[in-house]
Length: 237
Image (cartoon, rainbow, N blue to C red; front, top):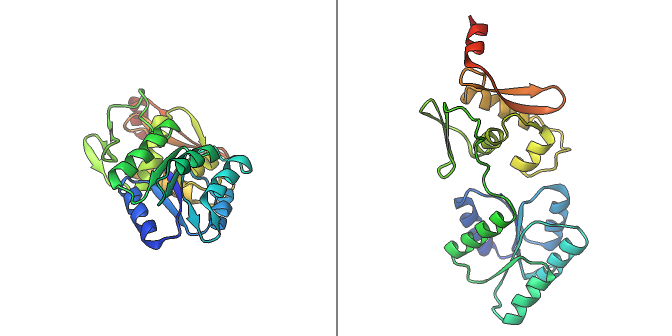
């Protein structure tokens, strides 16, 4: 998930970032409420973590503004040094989905993030049932094998590949891919998607020889397509 973290304490920022990166999340850090509010208008976040006390406002007000004015519907985890029951109730009433008191415990923190992510539907995409047996995907270790051989992929390439494998036969626009994999608005002009798709074709041999072809659809996006291996071999001869 792409997670935005609003926390002004540098040490806490580093701790939260380390925990989230260890679970292979994408993380954007903010020290001021105004920075996060601006970022939510320019980028796509799957999840927000917000501290109570901030140099330019109150975390409660940020949560309330995001819910009531910005229409933000993603999960929000609220964190604070306070452990009072009234504070917990107030945070939940303002729109937070869960509440954690400092000091954060790494395992509990990540478990809460994962639980909220699952509830919001952000589970890792699973390979389509039609995916040829030549491709083996280990979603726990984030690895992909082709004919039994592990292929070295960056985390971004892995996320893009698993998305295509889970949507065999479906057209995915560049804008949609930018939002899901990079966490940025799809109207940004960039060749990033095309570059990554080109690398995936080469690394995973998605030219049809193993029964899958990653095809470019003119002015629309990309589609992973099933194809006959024999047909591909005949075309090559």
